[in-house]
Amino acid sequence: MRTGLLRGGIAPGALAGLLGGAISAAALSRLGALPPTASLVRADAAAAGFVLHVLFGIVLGAGFGVLVWHQRAGAGETLFWGLTYGALCWFLGPLTLMSLWLLGFLAWDLHSAQEAFPSLLGYLLYGGVTGLTLALIRRDRRPTGSGARAGAVLRGVLAGLMGGSLLRLMLEAQGLLTTLPSMMSGAWPGWVVILLMGALAGAGYALLYPHPPDGSGPGLIRGMVYGFCWWVIGSLAPLPGARGGGEPAAGSALGDFSMLPGYLLFGAATALFYAWLDGLGRLLFSDMVGARDEEGVGTEGLRALGRGALAGLIGGALFALVIVQIGGLAAMRGVVGSSSIWGLIAQVVVAQAIGISYGFLFRRQSYDVGSGLGWGISYGFLWWVLGPLTLTPLFLGSAPRWRVEAAAELFPYLIGHLAYGAALGVIFHLLEARHNPWWTPRSKVEAARVARRREQVLTSAPALWALVAVIALTLPILLAR
Image (cartoon, rainbow, N blue to C red):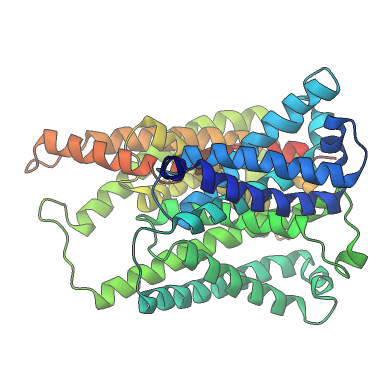
């Protein structure tokens, strides 16, 4: 019976849920978000809420273990599944079941969701800790030598330092770098804190992914969600003496939203640099050759860029419809300094350039319409953060707009970017799926695509798509004042 429990993931999942529940309960206690949990048993003491939250964590952890125990081993993949599981538990718990039990109605309105936002951070922390703990219990089934792991950590540190340097420049442009020394009680300058955080985050990413997943594009999305994890930790962990006395106000995340775009871009840049450093190492020190039935890198790359350009053009036309409806051509007119028609042309050119980058980063990564949709929407959200919030203000001669007010104002652009990304991903997949080299039988190509699709489903890719949707559609609304 014990072997059955272990194989089913119930026992290790419950153990992981115990640790995740204890850590998240401690964080929620600092934010003052445990009283609603205690009220489930008609108790007012914070200790009752703590114990009840931990018990819920054990039960939810057992369910999580059953769900992911047979997924591909790996700490990185399990971490992202845990984060998605935590977000789902927040929707089912505080917003639905707890509200029905305590108040008799569903807390699906904006005000209730904003009131429950601190608990969302706690549930995300719970999911992340539970996922990492379960991965440690299960162990990575792919052996990695100590030398290879040390090399991966070194590449991760270098990638984190490069990503941290970019984040430092963006924070300096907005005057946000001066707020960071308070995190270390004024001991070190803000730029030192950023670089130390970059080195630590880069090393952590390398430990999660000693073998980087294939494809720079999926790594970019994984890195963006990894940066979101660091933002959650920073929002939930006001240490004593930090943030002006360590006052754990429930709405403290509102002030931290200006850091969220930075964390997202920092994580994406770190993952991208890490993948490139790993690829450079394999190029210089590996004698492996590609399969004989594959196209050359140059030919395949040119095809991917052409498909990306066409898909970006179609997606750009859809995005232009949204921009016209919300009057967004004025912003592009400010960039090109001319009439609205030139602003529209500039918008289409930019959309096509983004499509080309998508073709370069995501070639051979979408094996059906669903995966193309998932990667496309995720890439569209990344460009909402990188475009209207960051690069467009820089081109206009001002600092990036990372404040919560700017994100709420630019929310219509987010819808446009998500629609653009959806069209981009689907069209690119359809164009790529039509290609079949004449020397390879069609049945062999289809069999390889089915095998890669099954392999991708066993990774955290579906969890990433779901979590990006939660970040994109939930946070700008919940954090709007």
